Structure formats: structure tokens, C-alpha cells
Amino acid sequence: MDANPLFLGEPPLITLAQAPAADPAEPTSVVMGLWPLFVQSFDLFSIVLILGSVAAVAIIVRNLFDVRAAVIAPTKSLDRIADLARAGRLAELEHAIADDTTFIGETLRPALGAKQAGRDAMHEAANLGASESHAKWSRRVEPLAIIGNLAPLVGLAGTVWGMILAFASLSAAGGRASPTALSLGISKALMHTLLGLMLAIPALAFTAFFRARIERAIGRAIVVCADAIDRLASGNSA
Image (cartoon, rainbow, N blue to C red; front, side, top):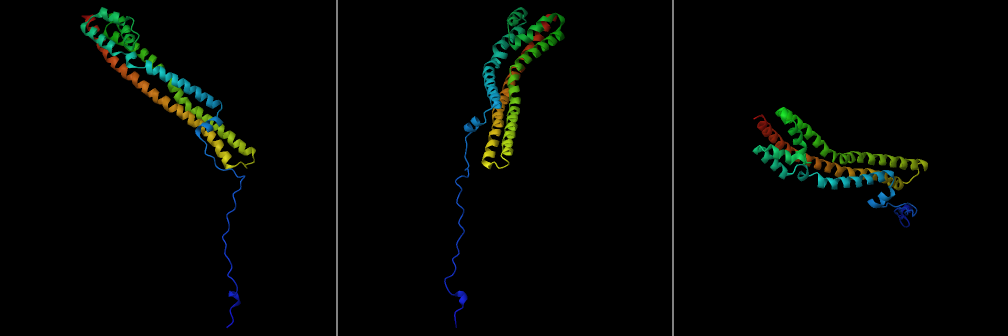
């Protein structure tokens, strides 16, 4: 039998399609560090955040030394006031708080000034003095809270501005901008949000820390001052 002509000859070679060669002109992905990204995204918003960081550091360092129980209401002064009040030594007590600039003196001086009007008047005067002193100490921390609350908003404003510029450049290129260039523009815009959060988080954390210090020191001083007022009022009425 004659061979089938369909099977004559060499079988056809089946070759795999070769992958197209990479275009050398096509941009490759580049991993950029934070510092080069910060340098490229530096603008007015970055300057504002840097100035806010410098101010926050200065406030934190100052309050670390000033906002302490040893400055607000020293334990030594509290113990002395308590001893003098228990002993009923009114003259020595008045002399002790005459030049006292701490929370103790600012609370007891008004109370002693109203000692002729009775216990209730002494407590009312002491409450007014304590409120004023508390507000004075709280004002030392308030600028830090303001910086912590405004920093994310400034960072967000910088990010919105950067996104506007990124999409404006995409529109100017007729929508033909490469994904690499677009993603780089968005990354530079988001750098402002990162800077704002890096400023806000420690600023708000230290704000809570200093406020806790103030409340703890003042809370103990109020107990001692209230007891001293009661003893002085009782001695005065007697």
C-alpha cells in the first residue's frame, strides 16, 4: 500500500512565540527613600511644618523642667503648710505663703485675705485663686495642643495641593503621563500628610502627659489647702 502523502516528510516544527524584547526607553520602577522624597516635595507647607516642629520641641523641653510637681506644688511646702495649719500658727502661715509663687500660695493667700468673713468666704476665695492658678499652668501646655491639632490639617492641605499639581501635570500631558511619573507626584503629595502626623502624634502625646502632671500635682495641693483653710477658719472663729 502506498504511504499516505499526508504523513510524508518531516513533521512541522512547533515553536514558542518569543517574548518581545524590553524597550530600553521604557522607565523602570525606582525605589526612593524618604529623604529624597522630602527634598523633592519641599515647599511652603513643609516650611510651616518644620517651624511647628521646632516650636513644639522648644515647648516640650521647657515644660519638662517647669511643669513638675516640684514646681507646681512642692512636697516640702505642702508638708510645712499642713504642719503650720495643724498647729494653728496663723502668723507663720501667712509669712510662709506671702512670697510663695506656687499653686499653694496662689490658693491660700486669697483665703487668708477673707478670713474675717468666715469659712465659706475663705473657701470661695481659695477656689477662685485655685482656678486662676490652674488656668495659668494649663496655658503653658495649650500652645503644644494647638500645634498638635493644626499639624494634620496643614499636612492635609499640602497633600491636596500636591495632588492638584500632579493631576494638572497629567492633564497638561494630554493624559499620556507615565504611571511612574504620576505615582511619584502622588507620593510627594502624601509626604505632607506624613510630616503632619509625625508632628501631631508626639505633640498631642506630650500635651496629655503634661496635663496629667498638672492635675496630679494640683489635686494633692487642693486637699492640703482645703484642710488648712478648715483649720484656720475654726481657729479664727474660736
